[in-house]
Amino acid sequence: MATEQVNCVFCSIINRKLPSSIVYEDEDIIAFMDINPVNKGHTLVVPKIHEQYMCDIPDETSQKIFPLAQRINKNLRRLSEASDSGIKLEAVNLFLADGIAAGQEVYHSHLHVIPRFKGDSFKL
Ligand code: 5GP
Ligand code: ZN
Image 1 (cartoon, rainbow, N blue to C red):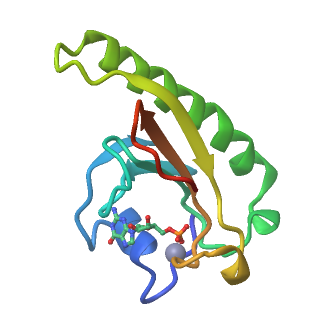
Image 2 (cartoon, rainbow, N blue to C red):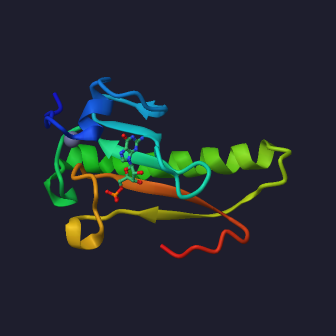
C-alpha cells in the first residue's frame, strides 16, 4: 500500500482527491498529464509511494519507471504518426529533478516525459 503525504499534490492525485488526466496506473505507479505542460503531451511518471528522492523508492517500483516511460514514448510516437495535424514528434526528453537544488518543485519523486517538436527550441 502506498504511503500518503498530506498536502502533496501527487498523493492527492493518486488518491483521487485532485483531478488529473491519468494515462496509466497499476498498484505501484501512475502516469498523468502535466497540468502546466512545457510541450504538448508532457507526461509525468510517478511512483505511488511518497518519497522525495529516487534512491528511496523500492526496487520493484523503480524498475517500472523506465519501461513505462518507454511505453509512453512509443504511444506518443504512434499518435504523432497517426495524426494529420502536421505536427510530428521529433524527439523526447526524459527529465528528473532529484532534490531542490536540481530544480524539484513537487517533493514526490517523478519522471517527466517531454515530447519535442521541430523548432520548439527550448533547452531543459
Ligand atoms: P518538478 O519541477 O518538481 O520536476 O516538476 C513538477 C511538475 O508537476 C511541474 O511540471 C508541474 O507543472 C507539475 N504539477 C504541479 N502541480 C500539478 C498538479 O496539480 N497536477 C498535475 N497534473 N501536474 C502538476
Ligand atoms: Zn506524495
